[in-house]
Amino acid sequence: MLAGLRTYGGHALIFFGLLLGSTLLRSAAGPADALSASGPLALPRPGAAGTPPALLIASPQQRDRPPAITPPAAVPPLATAPAAATPPATVEPATPAALPASTTTAPAALPATSRIVIPRIGVDSPVVEVGVLPSGEMDTPAFAAGRLTFSAEAGEPGNVVIAGHDDLLGEVFRRLPELQPGDEFVLYRGPAAFRYRVESRTIVREEGASEAQRRENARWMAPTEDATATLISCYPYLVDTHRIIVRGRLVAG
Image (tube, rainbow, N blue to C red; front, side, top):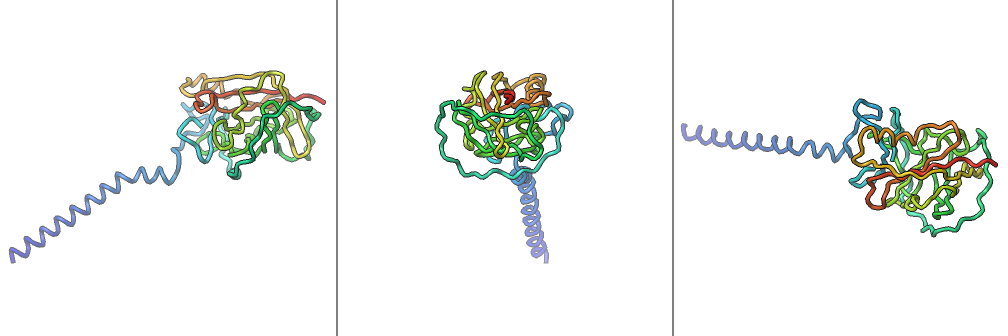
């Protein structure tokens, strides 16, 4: 009888020991499993206390580096469909050609901004609307340029904010740093073309920048009274510690 109890007690201790060990192992793995399922860690919404706006560029295949722009005010996240991940044909550098005339006011019946052409650097890319991710970053599509959905439309008063990747997913804005004041680019809304002339080219630090600097950087995406367009990408190529910002103004007639 005593020998049976000893045997039963020994088996019981082994069983509870295994149960406790498996519980601890699941607890240790739990946070990692949750992170893998939910994707990147959620950051506070833009405008929240202690969270300065930043010029960031994010994508569904984001590498482990600062991703393009967080708006200066809190904006509800917008669901946007990812762009097709089929690379377009290689765009050869184009020589500047005669650009179409533009109008100063875009009729309300026109569709959304749908295409950007920059002859100086050989860009001819679709433009898709993008919103703000739950992380507070402006989404940026693959193999296309992205227009912040609540920024102005091409040809209208206000600031058309467009971002593109420089070293991945199509590298649409890889040669953006080559633009200089006086160069022109065209934004299309269906068949309607609106010419913009570059007025400034600015490089700002984003990675490691102070809160005050990041807020100052974010002012480039703020609304404007005049018809302007702001093109943004990471800089320099394959390093991406800074942001290149090209500001253009609508050319009348």
